[in-house]
Image (cartoon, rainbow, N blue to C red; front, side, top):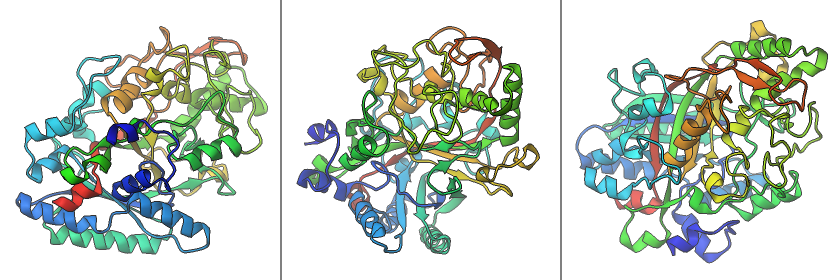
Length: 491
């Protein structure tokens, strides 16, 4: 049953086999929880494995299943108050604290070889701090307190993610979860709040640099794929649907009786601090270098991100303001490629680096390239005096303490997130020599930046050279697994 289920696309929750899986699957994986406020509690167990198991079982009573998430969403659309959302994650260290041996974890959480192997495989069981050299990350000793010990060792055993549209209700849920953690002898290492940013009419999510965020996501439910087809610009040539094997794996530690319908997912969490003033200043310097004036200066930032602030893809046109819904239905290379030479959207642009759509395979439907896709579920953090939607001046923009709580689900950390970060974002030779770093998410530790080539004018590949990088800094993170409900209840 597991193999057949994982191969499916466009799931229908009413399908009895799918419904059974959803009863045992944590929410938030196949579809985002959709709440505006979050709190994440990162904790460390204390005491023996018996006490740790009792604590996990107590927390499990709060967890939202995929079935419950869909029911809550349907109720919200009819006018009911948004219900709280909760999910629970464990690190490899946390599994050890529950009594699982190194050998058991190696068998339960294998990282299959990448189709394009890279040296030093990135493994869940090692934790994120141990893979800083592979990911280009800063020394864990520089991370925020609570994410890693001074020596860079992993310290986090688990994370509780709480979400709600009502901030008072969320604060109560966080207090209650904290009470359970304390009663179970655990120590809360980090309490991290998330707050969604929106544009003026609240129709689009924004990130702190001011760009629309959340587009170009894989879809797993038929309803979500249908929405892309009929309301969001179509699905040909770019079909967002992926098989669920892109994001789910069998939960090998679930009870044998539930093995055929118990699945989980690997979660990568990274707190990414954004120097907004530095980024936007660099945009203006790039516009100067390209000789842009007036409204044409907006294309400089679009070259770096791959989209204008309103979400308009720069590969589609050289001005913003494309009528909503902003389309996601385009490919860079291949038979229907809109820009194989990089004259409209440069190869180093963020959206092109992390979703090359045919650049690395010659065909955007190539299973190898699509196999590296991740499923993003992050949220912004930090409060600012003037939000992006209110057009702040440079002096009103923060230089730090705001950013993105980046979270992504996948079936393989090594072949998806880590591959994307190493072989694409951080790779100065991505697609061709001299491409340079991703201007947004590259973590360039140990990498010598290469000035990127920029269209000048629009449609002309490599018309100008300019260096643009290092305005996002990792402040902490970890690798987690999102276990099935049967596993959590069996402890």
